[in-house]
Amino acid sequence: MLIYMMDVSGSMGDEQKEIVRIESFWIDTWLKSQYDGLQRRYVVHDAVAHEVDEDTFYRVRESGGTRISSAYTESMKIIERDFPPADWNIYIFQFSDGDNWGEDNASCLEMLTTDMLPVCNLYCYGQVKSPYGSGDYIRELKRINGKHENLVLSEIPNRDAIYDSIKLFLGKGK
Image (cartoon, rainbow, N blue to C red; front, top):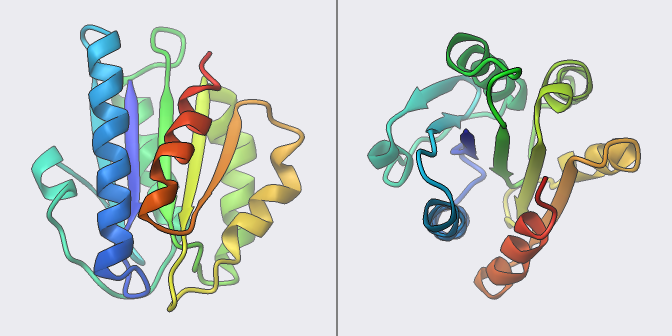
């Protein structure tokens, strides 16, 4: 099962959202060609997260502040409700520009290391470069990256970097 998470806050401009959508589309296309019966869920967030359908994920134009932990909470609800880790392989692809409310970073790292990484086969975080965001979140993730072999980090400065990011994510398969 796959969960795609996308930051749709105000610091994520149209170009950043487009990069995320292109990368998500090609990841999804490749995985669907390789595996039958994939279940996919989509979460978008600014300060609040929502599970949305695929069409909404590829079209939504939200704005507002950023609280990444809201996406983690929503994703864990989906996993606990529909995909018990004992029965499912769980792959998460999270995309953001790394701009997060500072006080939220500690909560995110706690949720990620305690709740999410233990149940995921692979957790991929792609950070798109934005002229409006701080980009701080990937620095927080780099602090824990060496301790979790199922955590893969990718920096995506522009559209030209999408292919390399996909190779980085999918080359780590478990």
